[in-house]
Structure formats: C-alpha cells, structure tokens
Image (cartoon, one colour):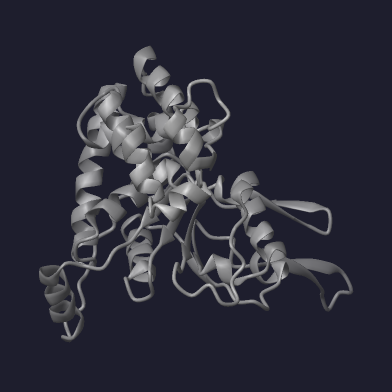
Length: 320
C-alpha cells in the first residue's frame, strides 16, 4: 500500500475519510463534528473524551467506527467496584502449576471506557497508564498492546453523585474533549425513524489496522510553516494566567492554563484537519478549527468566570 509520493498518500487519506464518514452516516444521524473529532484523534494517534448526557449514541458511534475501520473493539463499563485487574488482566495458576497471564479487555484496538468517572482513581490510573505507555505491566512482565490503540472514554456531565472526577494530569492525556449535544428536531425524527424499524444498516469496511498505522505516520510527516507553529504555541501560552503573555482578562478568568501537550496536539490535529480538507500543510484556520476540543479540558476557570457563567468554550472564543 505504499503510495508513490506523500501527496498521493494525503489524497488517499482524504478520500478514505470521505468514505468513512459516509459509512458512519448510515448508522449515526448528525453528530458530524463529533465524528470528525473522533476520526482526527484516531489518525493523530491520540485518545478522545466524549462528554454528554446518556442516550446520545456514544457507544453506537464507537462500535460503528470500529466496524468501518475493521478494528477489534471492547467496551468496559466503569463501576465503583471495578478493579485494575478487571481492565488489564491478571495472572492465574494453571493446571500445570505455572502462572499464566489472562489478558483483560484493554487488549483491543479501540476501547470504549464507558463512564470513566464512575470508577475509583486506582482503576482510572490503570487505564491511563495503558493509554500513555501502550503497554501494561502485570507481575513484573510488560505486555504490549495492539496497534493502533485508541481509547474513547465517556463522561456523564450531570450526575455527580458517586463519581470520581478525572484529575487534571490524567485529563491531559486525552487529545480531545468532545462535547455531545442533543440532536436537532429533524435529526431526532430521522433517528427515531431509523431505530424503530426492522431495517439494520450494513456498513462497509473502509480501512484496516495496517493502513491506519500508515496514515498516522503520514500525518506526522506533514510539514508545518513556522508562523502556524508560533500561532499554536502563543495561543496555548495565552491560557496561562501566570505567563507574561496572558491578558489581564485571562488572569482574572483562569486559575490554570494548558501545558505543552496542548501545543503538540494543536499541531498534530491541525495537520490531520488540513489533509482531510484537501490541503497539504496546515494554516492558522486549521489550528483554530480544533482549538476548542484540545483546550477545553486543559484550562481551569476561576471563581470569577464561574460567577459570570462563562464556559471554557466562551473563554477560548475570546482567546481566538
């Protein structure tokens, strides 16, 4: 599958992206921005956090993406009594009196970590280590995870009873924080029509694991102009209330800003955003297009911002 030039490969990725979205569209109505963010994070080799109320087809979306990309998929339902070994696996004593490793559900290409904020920090940390290292260690032995490896975690924003919010350092491991909203009236009509009949939509496989790894490498190889790099780094620096470049308004509205990982993800995401839109190098518009999902979980609002009812998105708007 090697293409003659990177330009040819970039065109192939753009075409594949179009096919993938149309296949997903057979099952998922609307949610175009969410689908786009999920696919950009897969091709950028990042992980994604989906925040939305129950019943917005988060699980169905992830299952459909896995089917179209021909990847192994596992769903882990996080509960307060879930243990780290329930995710990564454990050693058991076999009949031959030797210990053997039984792999947990994390050994798949796409993991749906459902309601990740329902489980205690120890179990959250086990998954987040796997996300960072792309490997797990059990009884001193390291087991590599499948490639590509992608975690989609969902978080329920409304019920805060019995939840364990993810610490900032762990939130930082997610490339995107994607907010799901209720469908429009027309979309909801379409959803109800589609899901209450006996017709089950058939989706075709568009890519496989090997091709996805190839395209992930391609995205990294895309050149970026210095002015775009500088724009991304300056944008992230402006979120830090203790930095010299922060405006008096930001000093008042934010307690904490984004770290260097945000700059890295802005550039990687902008590269991928450029390619799927038919460009061979990202410009400042591509950085702006993905700024909200990259930054919204990396800035911590001050008491003033909360008192004024300013959301993270509204503050990012002002920065842009």
